[in-house]
Length: 98
Image 1 (cartoon, rainbow, N blue to C red):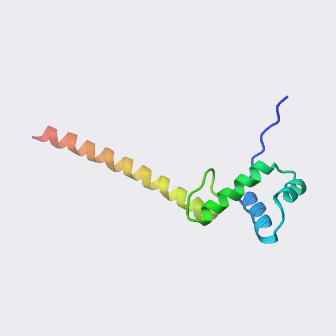
Image 2 (cartoon, one colour; image 1 turned 180 degrees about the vertical axis):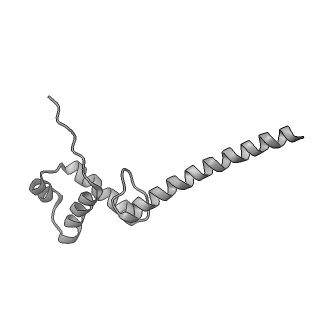
């Protein structure tokens, strides 16, 4: 019998990280009190540290700023793809006009 994997909202993850960072609580204590896995909480701490240093980190972003950055990066990627397609299409049609 396998257990269902728990999913947590980024705001909840951020609250847990802030408990550990701001109040100086240990990871083990917070995990026991909130019935969380230590591996997941340590991963959230690593994600938060990466975001604070300006990196994107691994996994879903925790802070609102990083969430917005990821969204904007996705939009830029899509716009570049669209622009490349338009360049190819205009080259194709320009060739037919000659």
